[in-house]
Image (cartoon, rainbow, N blue to C red):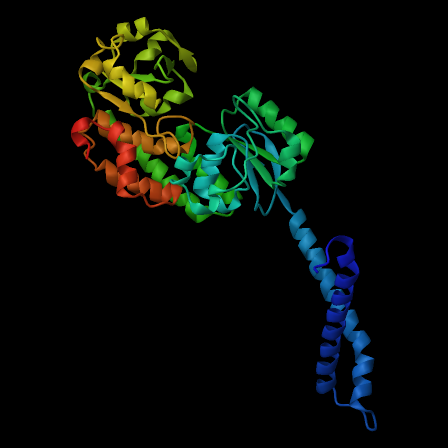
Length: 401
């Protein structure tokens, strides 16, 4: 019967002592072979006299090694996060906890081996688009954003070396980061979640997590997407830029106002957000009368139920986008392409929107673009069926397979 708990301690101690004695004895014997015994002195006696010396040397070596290991664990460095906070972090980081969904995606795409869990357990459908190694990681809840579910006691149980959050770096989030760090003694970094900052954040985190080569790959892709394609967009006349409505929710009557982080992808591709007429802010409820007055050229949809009903709903029948059948549902597996959440997952959304809004200027094969993005960022190879599932409701019907 296996022995567990306190009963194992004496046996382990005896085993360790026996192993130590054997090692010391071997060292002593090796010395005895090197040193010639004096006249009349037996070799066995020389071995016995050398054993204490061998033990002393071993104790010195092991003590030094243990001290060096402890010293390495205690080495820290100070970094400045996106909020300007000076944060002292370990020199070596192997366990990272993310405060919200955008940070989870950022860490997964860069260093999945350093993840210790999920803010929210992926659904079975989402898992099919993720690496097998992370699919069954435990859930610890979210520290930040709407609907925070994590408590600090649970955070401590996961024993992270570092906590990261990606998104806003405003006062509310700075206060949260400072409070969590003070109560848990775990360093907490705030990282700017704006799309334009993506290359910079990848390089910073790659430096901190010792994944610089991969970080450079992802940062280069982000730069090509955000900056390299900007000139091509600039060549498109204002008269050819569509007026777009983004409908969230089961009835499509929630949208992002001007300046909303949820609308960054639309702004990046130079399209016109019709809801900007309602002012600045974040997500907001609006009325069908407002949509009718805006009369958008294109409707982007988040909820599958709304996508399925909007074409036949009499309330929406007079909208130009409905009449011309220019309604597209943003793919959302494993994460949304437009927002939901507003993280690095939106990089593929930029390329998707450019493809469907400006097909003449951006004739690239969207299937190949999607396949490449998922291989590089999510480290999965999509099947043809998975590509169909993502792209069929997201592209003009003439392009459906």
